[in-house]
Image (cartoon, rainbow, N blue to C red):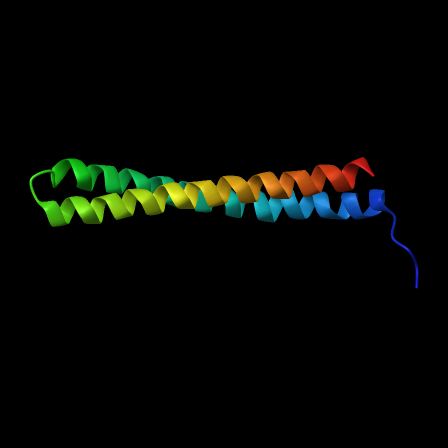
Amino acid sequence: MAAIDAATFGKVLDPVISNILNPIVELMFAIALVVFTYGVVKYVWGSNDGEARTTAKNTILGGIIGMFIMLSAWGIVNLIASTVNAL
């Protein structure tokens, strides 16, 4: 069984990260941003209705959590990529 060195693995991993993972993470971040914005709009428009405000708060919270998860995923992927490329 042939050993794979880190440089070769990094060269194989770079196109996968830049062409597949980064666009997926960017798309999911954009979706979370849209959900967050939708929640803010619902919160402002439903300011008189308590139930609508609660639903909007949950939507805003979901958008924030989604953005945090996508930002964390992007950071982890880039950390792994830079670690593999540095070896």
